Image (tube, rainbow, N blue to C red; front, top):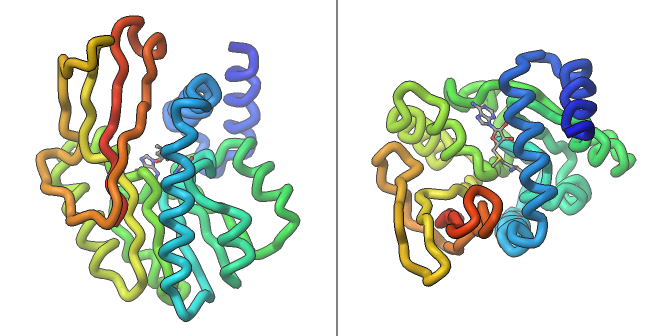
Length: 226
Ligand SMILES: C[S@@+](CC[C@H](N)C(=O)[O-])C[C@H]1O[C@@H](n2cnc3c(N)ncnc32)[C@H](O)[C@@H]1O
């Protein structure tokens, strides 16, 4: 609790948006990621490997934009900073822990931008289109908070997959709550009823292992990489 309170206070002081609700959400994510480090590890490795695979397919590596960069657990930050001339990280909030991670790289080609991404991706063209745009487990979160989740999902997919860049979409699409016998006791779609695009890779992510959200159930998200 004390660590969370300190992180919240420091984040409020360094944030350009200074929105307490958004910062509290990010601190909650940071705290959950610490508690669930072991359960989230394979998912984070899969995400990083997929981003590296995408970079391997690129000829031009001037600029990359990461959308929903958050805690920087799902993106291979050092690899991106070495591979591209310019790396721009976008999220509602960049916590001090993420800022430190960027500072520790000791490179001046990584920029952090706090911005609401639910209004579309047209702004990416302002500085010239990036060569690669990575949407890193952002889509379901935007949908969750939107009054019209399906519209946000449709808009993000159209912008990301239709832009003049190589798209890299990683998103959870649905979750299952399972009991200790492995039986599914509940399911939920996370894309507002919109069909997910065909995936190159897919895996399960145990977002809440037993004991995190409930003692007798775990919550497992389905993740796709496009
Ligand atoms: C599951 S987390 C992603 C974690 C991150 N990719 C990482 O590597 O640690 C979802 C992120 O989406 C961000 N987010 C949610 N809604 C957003 C919005 N409307 N605009 C920008 N970022 C948003 C949250 O702040 C959070 O950092």
